[in-house]
Amino acid sequence: QLQLVESGGGLVQPGGSLRLSCAASGSNSDYYAIGWFRQSPGKDREGVSCISTSGYRTNYTYSVKGRFTISRDNTKNTVYLQMNSLKPEERAIYYCAASAGDKAGLNSASYDNWGQGSQVTVSS
Image (tube, rainbow, N blue to C red; front, side, top):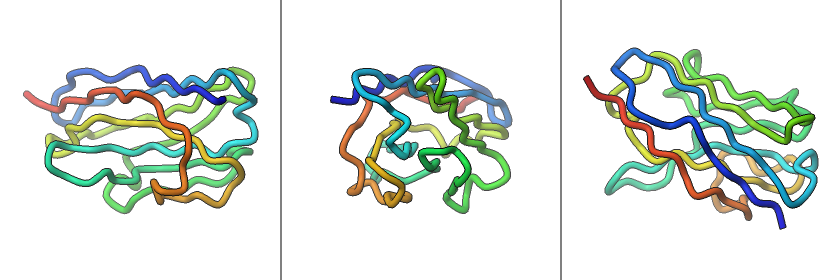
């Protein structure tokens, strides 16, 4: 069973940066696409970004394009989400999730394994 643990969340000022990490264990994460999702109070969970098993293909929701970068280091079983120019409305719990193969995209229903989440707060 693949297990995921997020880290790197915290409090940052508007315009600031954070890097989230998603560490995988318990199974070979090389065979899983990884997605990042976020959920704010009272809102549905939103797909933010995803990366293919090889790391060569990435996808972003429109609102974060040009500001967020997803990457993975399969030697460390870790996926990263670099978030720049953060906005107050991006305050949320950020989750990483894994889906076997490369067909999941940003659809949360396609992901089977989820981490516990990491809180990101953007405030002055």
